[in-house]
Image 1 (cartoon, one colour):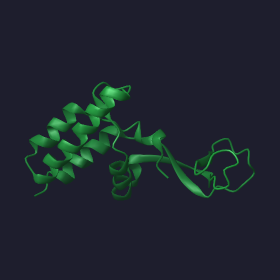
Image 2 (tube, rainbow, N blue to C red):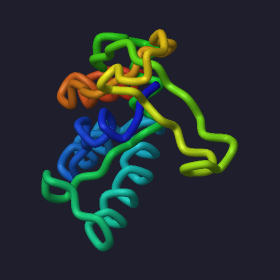
Image 3 (cartoon, rainbow, N blue to C red):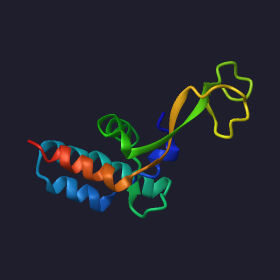
Length: 127
């Protein structure tokens, strides 16, 4: 599971979007356009700790499939609230192991932002 805890640590900046665009490949140019739109949206409504940056949630998840060490995980019990007792549809992660249930998921709480961008650059540079 790759929640916001991890994706917000692998922010992509506007300058990195420029570098993706400069690759000159269709994939690099497309990624730059999509991510730059995210950066602009986050700048106007939800500024990140890194100026002119945004998380790219799905791309980080895919990157972790290609290179698992991009994220740092630990095992926790994860449940999805379906009864609406506390929250309907919310994913609940027992980070303090208080529920007494066996861990059932590897949950990412950190990510290597530079390696994430470097991997995108390497992959999107290919024709």
